[in-house]
Length: 612
Image 1 (cartoon, helix red, strand yellow):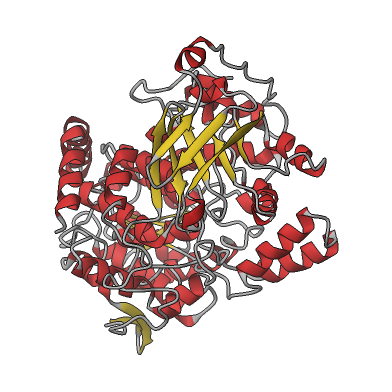
Image 2 (cartoon, rainbow, N blue to C red):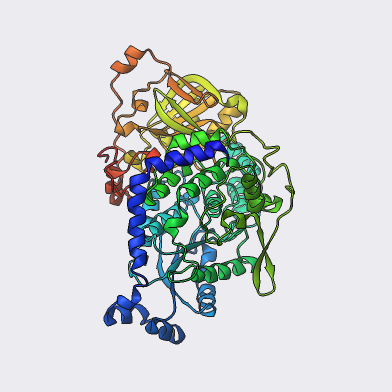
């Protein structure tokens, strides 16, 4: 093992010792109780199988076969989740063939950031993660299951499903993805058309045509944003079957993987010879492996929020300092849009997850001896790629070399010797920046601040042609306690236009950017947020701001006495009303800081404020 990985993991273990001990004691106690259906009253049990088909009803009534919960984020509006509608019949039959039953335990909501980007509904996006976690718990609350399958793909859905599952950590779970849509209009061309539209050089019809050619079929969007980062992380953490992440939907191999996942989770059930509770799979080493996978591929910055929240659900404390220390030793091995021109289908064809994991394992940059859903060989199972064989899916060794070195490389010739994320610190607070998509000469920007209280205000200033200068755009009061921490990806085309005009431009915000963002340097997730007394509320138009990703600093270059004497700006009345936002006031009031996962459960008193 690389010594830095070992050191980081040990620090995580030490700071988490009491919380993790209590978590494991809880799931061990629940596991000792064994399958619970036998303890249900006759009334409880009759309700549980009343609607089952005749063959399943007899099995459920007899209490002799394991019962698998299906928890799904299916809806037919979102391309990434539409394929999940076909999975339950496959799963039920596969369970029967494996001597088990499967029931659709519940659905969880799944919203699309692509649809809500720049819209009021985006203020519900981050909080939908914890809503999904609670919905997962409700689905499992009937206490009638021996194992579970979690069906989901996109941004907040997979983290929410996993957080919910970890509160039933004594049960085995396998995560089942749908896969990416086939490649359409190249992402770089889509981005070019967006910038032309922002400048008024093409009309709405041209923009809509480009977007429609890019997002054109069932499956996940093909850029490497949060949704596809989710799939990579589930695989590196050992929660997928090997190679399941990026197989296209509606293909025989995708169906075979879904069937195999069902058979496998039956084998992992409580009472079986390979009992594998999810709370043991998600351990300190698995969390470090997840961070390494994210850094090695330039994955979504949203996981600097989601991974700490997932870890905390398993009794583990992960900090941004852990990300930063690992980023200094983990090489960048992939160039996937927005960090390159290729999409996830090209990454998969170049060698994909099997090649990536093989390289990282050989370099001592992943912990191999971890519990996974694939079995006793630990993460070594994931060196192999799936293929369709007689009787279902089988696994084989991947190509020894990357099949496209412009997309995927080995540790001996990486795109960069360090990972794709950086931690920034200074008198403005703590923030993260994704550097894998930013040209190195733009890693440092020092310029006057232009302060905005909303993304709409920045867009209006752009439309009035008021931003043609070097600047650091400060967009504040965008944190979880202010308005739910919406993504500000709608600013990307305009900021890109200014950068292409030759100006030195950067963004500093206590909000988020999409996992698809990256070309313009952006210090995001700034903590403490403005609403909680963060220093960003002290910034004024004209203050010189210095963002230096190489040095890891973020500073307001203001005289210290003047800085200390300044009164912070007052948060605008953001409203929080309409489009269901008023229902989430409790979430805003209790959200932890971004570095602690922007969690709303408040189980340990770490809420940062009494926001509105």
